[in-house]
Length: 455
Image (cartoon, rainbow, N blue to C red; front, side):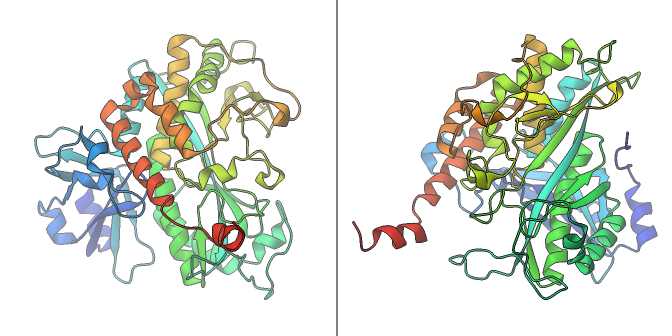
């Protein structure tokens, strides 16, 4: 198992790397990094940065929910102090001057943690596991697209031009040559990631034109969530330096497959290091089956964390264009058409791959929600349905098909609110409802094309 990104002594680390500037980072509900930039000397000499807690009710467009949605909210916009996590310290490899980027936890001025901060929500779930001597282990697989720069949002995205001077015109799953088209970009990406000490394992070409996937080594969920948000920032910066965009939209192009963030999950005994998902005979343990039962029972209500945006549900539509994206909560052995795939391998590697989260999901919240569903299954001893063999396309569509129904299911699920925090869930729903409302105020090109002169 990969060790968690080791803690550092900040003063010594700053001296070693000649740090002159610090980027103090916090992930908001959408996964966007917010924060402040400070001189290194001021930062080390007690200059603890502050932010208003209202950053956690800001929508992806920069707006806020209506007052009616925020009756539970303190309108004072309380100050939060940002406290560095010494295990989440990274260099900024593209900066001109030696710069640190540090992920912070958020606390109110009275010392209480900010319970609606996504990083705290994941910590909260992990504490439930720790109390039972359990250590969840996660390995994310993050898909993304490289696209041509697009400065006019009314125009559809296109694949970028590679070294050959041509765009991809067909799907080239696992093609080495297709990856090599963007070798200069990926060489810089790997150099940046190595400087940041990100635990990247493999890079492959996925189904879509210009679609790639990066796999991370398995390890501590909090450390991996940190690494995913840093990787997203790193890849976007690298792509810009090569004259293109990198996007983690769940469905950026209509006729291409969507992008996922698959989460491989196992459960270890914190003392012995034994995989608790493997039974004595090498078959799934009772604990593993209950974990699967919890995923099956609670994941429909948790969909706003796996598919947080309007665009997310375009990836999950049961259609040929969706590729191998699941639209079900079945499980099966080595079956990529189900929502929960159990890879075939040695008993000590027994795990489940949650294939529902999109690449656009906030990694802290997607991991927290997935672990929460499994935890509830183990606590309630929920049994899963039998494993599915063959194509899952004939199974009923039981997942919410849009943001609205997904939010309705979450709002009615008291069990998830108990584990993830009632105030957090209310805040999250308020933000997502505001985004949903803002979307419906926009007149789309489809409406202009088909309705303008015909209705």
